[in-house]
Amino acid sequence: MLKRLLCLLVLTYGGPEAVSGLPASGWRVLDSNGTISAAGAVRLNRPCPALTLPASWRVLDEVYADVTGDGQPECLLALWRPWRDWPTRRWQAQPSRIAANHDAAGLSAHLAVLRPLGNGRYQPRWVGSALYQPIIALTVLPGGRVATLETTYARGPGGNSVNVSVWSWTGFGFRREARWPVVAKKLAVERSSGKLAVR
Image (tube, rainbow, N blue to C red):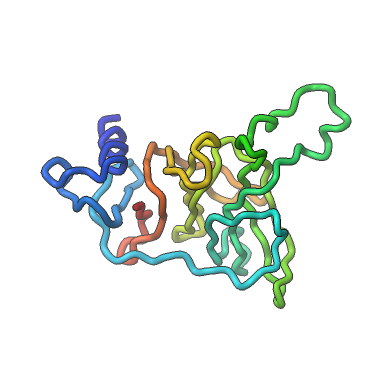
C-alpha cells in the first residue's frame, strides 16, 4: 500500500528529487508490484498504417502490434466517439449498464482492435463497449499484454490518468491482470527490461 501511495505521489507531482531520487520530469519504470524507478531508454509505440476511420472517431493513442496472439499485428486504438448503447438494448426493459459511460458532450471511450487491409481499409477484429474508465494512452508490453492509462469522464480526454492497468487478450476481449493508481499522460516500454514506463 505504501509503495502504491508513493507511486501516486511521485507521478502526480513530479516528485522532488530529495524525496524520490528521480528527476522532476522524464520516464519512470513501473514494476509489477507498483514500485517505480528511473527509466532508461524507452521504446515508443509503433504507429499503425494509415486507416480511413469514421470522422466521428477521435483517436488518442495507437500502437501496431500483435495483441491477439495470432502472429499478425493489429492496430490497437484508444478512441472516443459519440456514445451508443448496445443494439440489443431495444429489446430489454432494464436500464443499460453502460448508460453513464460518456462525458458531458456525449462522447464515450473505447478500445478497438482493427486489422489493416491496405489502402486505408480495415477489418474490425474487436471494438469494445463504452468503457467505465476511459483510456487516454496505451502501449503493448512483451508477450502482447496491453497497458492502458485510464482517466475519468469528468477529466476528459486531455486529463491526467488515475490508474494504469495491464490487460491480456482472452479470445474475445481483454481481461485485466493488474491495476495501480498512477497519474501520468504517456506510456512506453523500457528497452532494456521490457517493463512499463510512464511519464
